[in-house]
Image: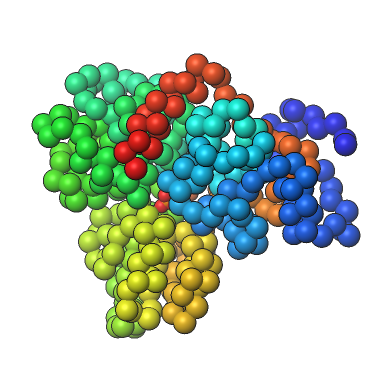
Length: 328
Ligand code: 13P
Ligand code: SF4
């Protein structure tokens, strides 16, 4: 096994060892998973081929629950950094791998810990609820974590009258204020992918497809959510398209989810919601798409890059995640 220089790994974010052409990546990944007693957890926003290889495929909550209970030596997380970090925090004895360490998240990046500490200090009486899309440092500053599939329940579990800070996603925060009727102090963060959807183009597309239902992830902007027939997490959207009688859906979330939608409801039509910029495929999360089959193969082969966290930080970040899991 070649020596992997840790500086190169940090700079590049992944194991950049050339893979011989004759290697059958799909079969080798399956073989390595068995050999290493590893499980592959993948989010719906991953490339199709990676989703198809997953032992656990799902939304953030499902994957966090799976990470907490898997009986394997190694967890390979095909998702973004905060997801792999969460897996390590809730199951610290496992080796947790992420194919590309640079698979970050604009939402997590929009909440630097020192700024958030100062913000929190302005509202010392508030309960701090954070969306799981944040760093371990931010989780450690929180009272309870939530995902988009349990956020309403988590907010409703907080005694009425108690002030609430919600971070980092202002769009999800505004949606929760509307849904729960609770006033919340919002951190000003957002997801670049979900903010890229064009309200005008969605209206036009809906007029061209009058039988289609429009569905959206709550990380989208308020004016987009206001016209949606259904708002939900990725797994919520997936359930909705299977159960609803409509045959056509315009889908405002990362386009990777369409793969599982087409598998679960092959007779239905799914149209990705249009974005503002004609020059980019903004409904794709560039961070999620950093994970490739090649990086996944090398990650399993060399068992790198590995998520390593300070034990004190892990302990502090675990308590608010445990509170969420108890309530979910
Ligand atoms: P969910 O899969 O929990 O809906 O979250 C989507 C997301 O933003 C992942 O980045
Ligand atoms: Fe982060 Fe948005 Fe990508 Fe999800 S889709 S990982 S919130 S940047």
